[in-house]
Length: 91
Image 1 (tube, rainbow, N blue to C red):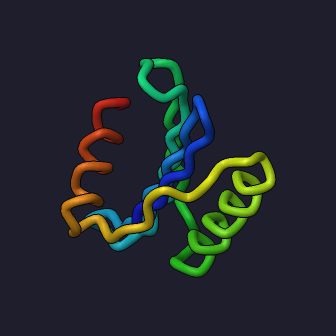
Image 2 (image 1 turned 90 degrees about the vertical axis):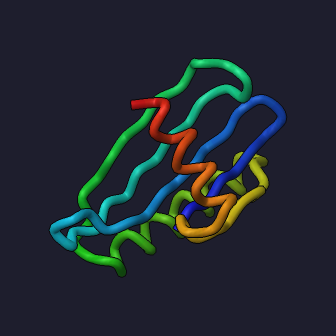
Image 3 (image 1 turned 135 degrees about the horizontal axis):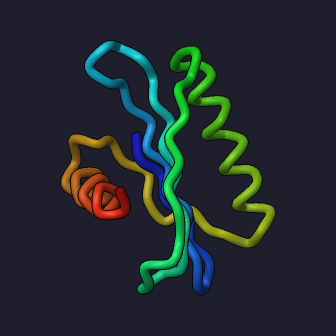
């Protein structure tokens, strides 16, 4: 699952996925739209439920900061593949 929030100048993108060992990975990228400024962090979740709880927390925080959700897609969709490709450019 990929979710992206944006404000006028900034973005936050979360990618929740399983790695080849079956572990749940919670990846969060953030930065200024149209620039290379930002960061990327990967966290190993105890399971899917914990990753979804973290996603809900990020959603609550970003909405309270005035961000709006602009994308919610599976990683297999065209939009999701494009977002994962952008995410991989940050590494």
